[in-house]
Image (cartoon, rainbow, N blue to C red; front, side):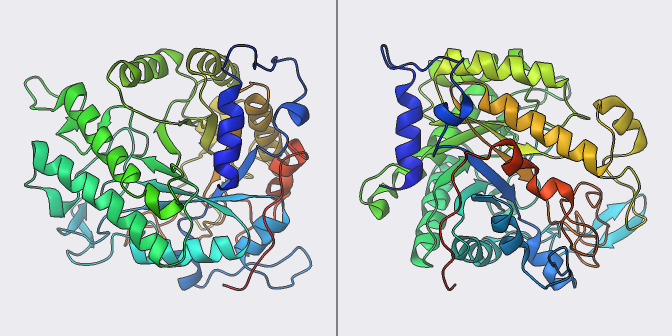
Length: 416
């Protein structure tokens, strides 16, 4: 049994009568040996192919994964896209930015890239969270497009494809020597997945959608695919995370997760995205975490968060975090502001009995050619990394470990 199964069992026991640990217990006592300090490094392969390099503060060359491990990170998160190739020309404001048949960009996170990055992460002793998007490109609250290969599939045929695909990628990872320690079935599934079959809201009157029933059927199919591979781990069930954006929106989380439980959607971990400039204030995140911890008794992970060390565009490309969003966030876009934000998020998670950890989203996405958010476009994340554009650590790299010095260290590095 892996560490993640042990820690999940320990955390779930806190919900049983007579077993609860009080919220007043010190985080170091409540979470010792059980806290995730993670990094989503899905664009790392594209960054390195574009010439991105990393080094210690004194200039000694090192890989990003080595530096993350040395800074106290103990998990890696990797997204997986079905077939990250443009099905059609991509046109923006009348300009063709990339052609049909070209890689989509954004990391080009097909199974081959994911396997290669996973093996490297595990060679550094990092645990692995696999984030299956069930799309050929970004999946988020505004985009949940079916893979082109499944465009004609509906109903039971689509559900069967989801189940088969989920099991197949987990088997291929296992055959490649990759140990998956937790899996996400879908990414930021606030409004469903695999639209329109699993879409839960109508964008226009009369839009044909699968609704909640269609969404839950697809989720159950994905989870069944995970369970189909439990024999690969000697029967130990792989923990399943279900993940929503808007981590401060308690009404959203209650509505969606109450629906999951009422309909028998089986899951183990609740994942939240929280960005201070997209979301509500930190107080709302804290309040939501507290309520979710009590209401569901499931481990909680802020599986995406980030903030900027500058409001300026390091590579001259417009950034997601611009001066207007900095003003709305409540934190200065400085190295110290980035550290403060991360300390606050870690503390918010550690303060609840079911708090399991925090992942920083894309800390190593350096502004290099060919590593934009899509092929033919630039990098809008370069001011929210944990490294300078030259690949040297910023103070924020050590912020998660500084906020949770009692969290477990990564395992010993091994030869890849």
